[in-house]
Length: 192
Image (cartoon, rainbow, N blue to C red; front, side, top):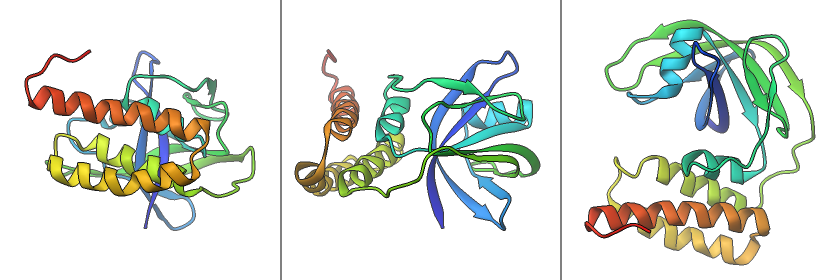
């Protein structure tokens, strides 16, 4: 099973990178991250041997990380050198244990060395789930056929129209803009 999270990692100079990431949980304290190459997250984790897994219900973080917006603030991690989202529901501080190398997508095995719960998870509404699904599609704009992306967006729009609040509408707008810019680039049009 894959869980959609936000991973914060730092480079050797201490600059934090924030990105959405589907992770797998193995046993109770092991997280597996499988980034595509090239990847800032992959480079950071290999360089520093650590990362922070953040759980949030603010879908603007997923959208903002993919569209160069920053609707979050960061706090220092509690046990490892790193950063976590200030408004996350929970976070896990992770230490790299093992790497299964692969030319396309290596598997990084990270052990949970510290975990904190900050707020209860109330669940996602349909619009939040739709934003996360579109965020996954946007993260793969260069890998997926445009027709698949636009078909899925059409379907996901139903949930946005029925259940979105202000946060979800803002995040959706950022992601739609990213798709529109991608289409404009493919068509050699000027991007605003």
